[in-house]
Length: 484
Image 1 (tube, rainbow, N blue to C red):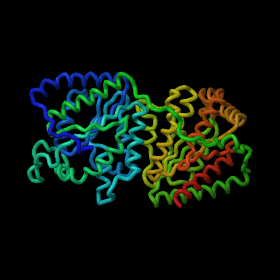
Image 2 (cartoon, rainbow, N blue to C red; image 1 turned 180 degrees about the vertical axis):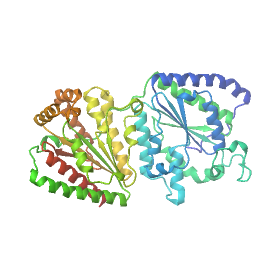
Image 3 (cartoon, helix red, strand yellow; image 1 turned 60 degrees about the vertical axis):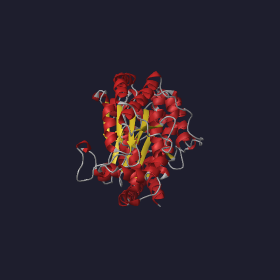
């Protein structure tokens, strides 16, 4: 990618002086148009020479309103970031609708730097490439404009200051970044390869000839203006085909008559809870993560099952994540953003009481998502769960199934019992009226998102005793299988 770049391109100061004022004015206008259109924007700056990069980035940001953009200087990960999956730190920095996120270096530099650190690898692992492509594709398909700029300079460039005589303009730069010649020699093969494999139509690379800063500044401005003008004219339209081949939904064949007698319940529950305590210790000792997803019909017993699951666990290494309607900030981000932020630490578990599957269930049935959005979500969810599994997260997904008669009995019980009335809402009755539409959405979900790496388990839940014991057993079995 770099061999054919003509680094002799220059621009006279007089020409630069004449071109920049209208470009700056247009950048400011487009920032406001992007904000009004609710378009999130990511601008990635990569390059060899951090001092030149700092100058170009700062000049680029000057025409922008600081209230409408965020600047991210990406260096070595902080302690929490180091403990989380690689792309987590960038997901959490993703812009909200109408905001611009400027990355001064990004996941590309970190992928190379963390690969080279201590000689860990000679080539970027394929799973890292896949992580990056999934991240950019998920955001781009949801309407994020991704602009990737590489500021390319000559090998060696101008002489850089040594550690004893750092120039004033180097303030704020890391010492190890000042030797651009070393960076060039060390990073070129890896960076070129990773850029070639991430040069996608919805997130293309633009190489900026940056030996001459005036030329670079103009090219950066023109590139950003061109992409933003395209974005405000009309959103990117991704492929909306549903994900992959379908499997047969196991839900219709589940035996809802299965029961566990009261006399056997306590002993069986204590046995499975004991297994789960062992699983918790094993996860902690081996620094493995667990994500458990509870989905099911209203009144299928999700809360009660979660209560029995966690009843005898150590609260220090698990979190229960209840999922309700998203707040304003969550609505302004990709729908997966709020769940990615709640991923577990190594040795910990996150238990989701409802989850990202709301996209293909309630949002589909209630028309809160467009048909294109919920159809695309099958692939997005499979990619998201693939990302989790690739980052050593065990994923267990449980669908709690009850029949229509049992659900009605539980609804009436909640209405009649003052201690349980808080559990029943108008939304529950509304969803019941759309039972058949939900059934269609449920079966599509089970068929489209039950994968070898994250399969669904359907739990017969007409009998609470049986469901509670079976739920814990399925989780313990799945974790033990994953750790073997």
